[in-house]
Image (tube, rainbow, N blue to C red):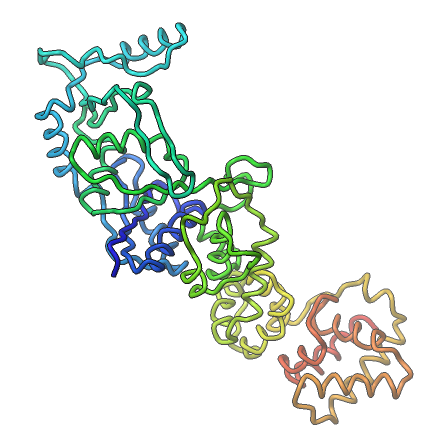
Length: 464
């Protein structure tokens, strides 16, 4: 096993969204590719907003996507004593200090700086204080002010910040709780994280964190900042663009391998290849090949990929996946056709499991009404004759395959000088209620000959 150690560190204040899932995927792939270690850490120091429901949703999303972790999940909320120790270490080494400025005073300083055209950063009022007033205080990191803070990002290249632009970061609040940037550094250092792969919304946090690593004597990890995902209007992906929750995509009928395949292509490529098995992703992935530009989320491309994976899905697994989508519609499959057979008839034309489920309903619930516009294209006398002819042919036939059933319809057409649409369309409507259904032979094979005959006879009574 290599020395590479990466982590995915979501905050449990909501569901696992697609941006977070892609970050987790890139970490997971890099670990798998390098034979390294993938760590899951839950950053739950925001006590007011962190919930167990969100933790469960994140874990569920990771498990559904198949992003298994090697260590964890670890929870920041169990490490408060550790954080306090390192805060005190910085204070003892004069690398941090107590700041007694009130919120009102800080706001006044901020407004003044902005009015004078200066960067609204903390002005260091308490940096050299020697007194210890009996009042609330925060602890600030004494940030070096000379030179620059630079790092070689594995995706974006060299990034540098003038040290003078970085103010004295608060590392401990007045209530004694540590702040985000400080916790992240302590966690990544003590967990021996070697490469930090995260969204590029964290780029501005990186120089502050590098200063903290250096002040504490920790080795600085490599960084790779992944560009964000945009909606179709080129703004940051959000709920207004559609679902952003990973589990919402499951509920909409997407397969995990389709979503994984789609997410890996948001920012990473391998030539013109579009479809990757999990093994191929691991073999070909390299975080250095992730592009610098933001990616646009394209639902049509995801649908295309999902249709591909549905077509290739094992019938037994496909039936298991389809079952909850039918159950949510109040459809029981206990007394109907084999769901594997039904799924096989539908998978060539479906983009999602939800779409499949909607089209599968008629296999288990005979239509109570028929597409009147479609039936209106035929004379009632023709409909009656067509239904009678098909029922007679099926009653005496010994067909056992979809192809054999299709051949019977050709015989009916030949014997009555009809064209196939004159028979196939009325029968499809009688069996399914509409015109959008699989091939006639496939439908009959799934329904069974007796159920097919009964539906044809019922349709004849209603429409002819």
